[in-house]
Image (cartoon, rainbow over all chains, first blue to last red; front, side, top):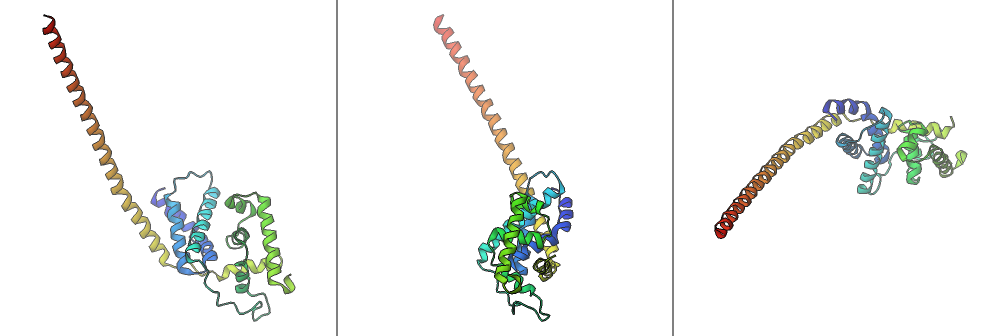
Amino acid sequence: MTKEMFSEKYLTYKVMVFQISYAYLRNIEDAEEATLDSFMKFYKSTKKFQSVNHEKNYLIRVTINTAKDYLKKIKALPLNEEVHGVYDDNGELDKHYVWAVVDELEGKYKDVIYLRYTADLPYKDIASILKISEALARKYHEIAIKTLRELIGGNYA
Amino acid sequence: MPELEKKLHETKTLIPEVPQRLDIKMEERIDGATKVKRPLNFRLRFVLATVVVACVALSATTIALFSHTQKEQKIISQITTV
């Protein structure tokens, strides 16, 4: 890949890669390093891609694996100090709390949630990235949502 | 869309903007990677060329020595038969 080609792809995907990295790591510095590492792996890759979508999915897979490697190094996510309770001042479900509950999910369910709601990907792409069937991706999403409802409790159970 | 799914979508707003320094860092890393690549390639080419030249020289010497020994042996055997 030439430097020019890479620059174009970097500009197209940098926000998405950073957002996925941040969702896993919850820390700007770590997300930044994971983003840089993911792009470097992508740059050095000699893989041939059948389509733009195939290339994008490959980059997302690299990003997830890189973020997970960082997660192993740092061992624990930083405490979310923004969490003050289940509901915010408007009486709605608090977003920080929702994120804290997502952290409680098992890895494969967390992957589906991040890919679906952070990267806004359709099930077909989620399945391709996680190397599972589309039906299984839907099933994982269903289980993740059910588990989240149980963990949140109250009106959501 | 159910409220939980809506809230999950909204969690995206908790992600900060991409830091501006990321672009500079990325450029530095790419430049670093290409700078490291060039001397390595050059070095590799140089080593390969040296190995090829050495191999050719070695085979030429072996052939020359071998043919010389063969000639000597031929002459000796001719003298002994005469």
